[in-house]
Image (cartoon, rainbow, N blue to C red):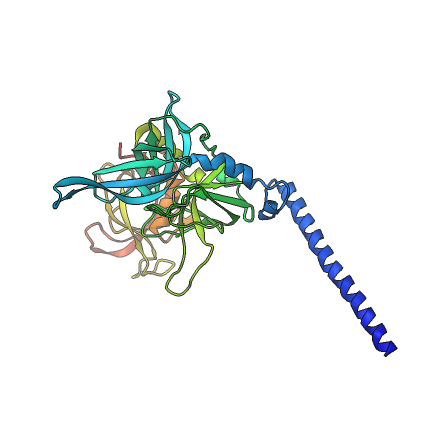
Length: 392
């Protein structure tokens, strides 16, 4: 009995030591992580549990600047014989800039929030956190990046100030991500909802929903909750700077169900788009002057009777850089500036990185002439295309 009691006491002491060791290891790990974050200049998710949690102050500053955006469509009611205005879509928007005269300002949102399809009889309304409702007009939209800018003419509420833009190119995976928006619709909107998480991924490509983007857009992945109605709101860093626009979430595909997969357009991707929309109401990009399509049914390298996989030129516009460079219909583009490409998205992504006057070195293969007649032997083409503004 004495030996058994002694054994129990020893076991109890060992258990305490083991627990203390685990706790001590956890504390040491947390301190190590905090030190690493301090050295890198980033703030991680664990900061919300500390005395220096930045989220409450950021929420207090930014929530008043995130609005509910409602799109209305006018229609003719045959029964009442009156024009009726019905709510078509809901989303969020972020106050980003005051007007030059100091009254009114600009709201950044998603194109899919304000897009009512082919219906031109649309109007827009914004509602602030304090309940103030204002009419807004559409300044311009870009379906390529799913961005739109609205303008309001009245003075914003006193506690609402433009949200400063950050540098999304400096983001690191694992740093704090804060989302503010207005999830819900109709009478069930949860105004000023704040969620927090981390940056889960950067430069995610090929992520879209119902054709959200008509161009190649690499997005930021976050695990902070994004729900219907959050679109067009604010993705913020630990400084309270706007680093992205919440745009979509992935819930499932044909084989999987997902949780915590939200995606945002990086603010650096659309800074120039925003400026163009505010200044001119439209976005003008340099182009080659071609219509293209993916050519997937081919080998990686050219073969005598089998064109390689790449981007097929469907047509070439007259008087454009592509025509001047010598591209023809049915050519297969396989390289841009020495990099192998396989899809139109890859080609467009490269073009979007350049400005008017910049040149691209293109490698293409010609197996057929522009009328579709097969050549006796294929030709390798190395062409220089100077991008130009074609659509003024």
